[in-house]
Image 1 (tube, helix red, strand yellow):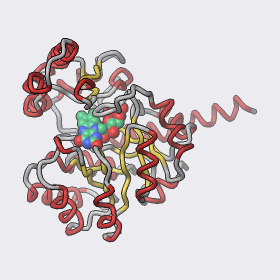
Image 2 (cartoon, protein in one colour):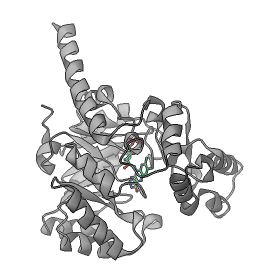
Image 3 (cartoon, rainbow, N blue to C red):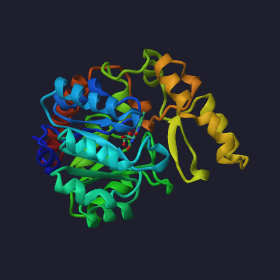
Image 4 (tube, helix red, strand yellow):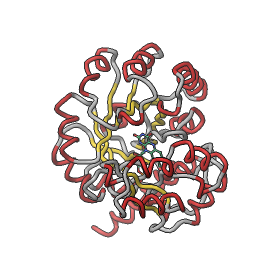
Length: 322
Ligand SMILES: Cc1cc2nc3c(=O)[nH]c(=O)nc-3n(C[C@H](O)[C@H](O)[C@H](O)COP(=O)(O)O)c2cc1C
């Protein structure tokens, strides 16, 4: 059940992708997602050193025999080293699936294809989904306003973007931003998506290596407890509404420059917050689904609940239409 072109393309059981999360998508979490029947994606930007990234790929392979992917973040500010070095490593390590994001993967697509790599590109607008199809991506994920990390600059929600993207391209579309449970999973499929990309839901899992206080914050958070910052600098980020995020938003509203805001939104402080559990220590990327997450579970529990719950909803809907 729930077989789509996405399950077929990636050789996975369920059309559920754990979108890469900088600092968090490490071997244990990625392998847990793949072992539970989804597709885990390693976040390559977490590793400043290429050798460390190689070790993490190998560690993931030891923890799962199932397919997993790796993220190629093309946004220049997120690059710890030239893109080519990552691609050479992926090919050398026999990585079969890449999730690109940030900017268009066009300059690299021929090399990736030649190596037999399946490429899913993540976009935040329908015009970019069209580009992904035109340049030869195998699939595209589209993320809406609700998502943790980087939504687009147009403030369009997933409910609008997903069906638009489905109508605009013929490659399979995955829906991201706001998907966290059986209801939203089935809604994504109803919108025409052939899979979901989840980030925030997977932070509050036992396998995600962040401080328990952060997971507790998520469990207690309301749907209004995230904030969009960075639009003035043309890089929108949805983050936890904590002290540094509120300060950054205030500074942005006052017309502060990126240089002035940077010390507050620094990645180092965010890292400290994830690791030490001080929610106000730095910026934490999180999506609106924080308001819908009520417990910390294992990844397998999350994925099983999504799949089994979706089957039950389908049964109920069948009775509704009969
Ligand atoms: C903590 C966190 C870090 C993220 N880091 C990245 C990243 O490094 N690269 C990327 O392409 N997307 C990143 N994302 C976005 C996710 O891969 C995914 O697209 C998004 O979380 C989906 O929306 P959701 O949060 O509503 O589930 C991140 C998301 C979160 C929550």
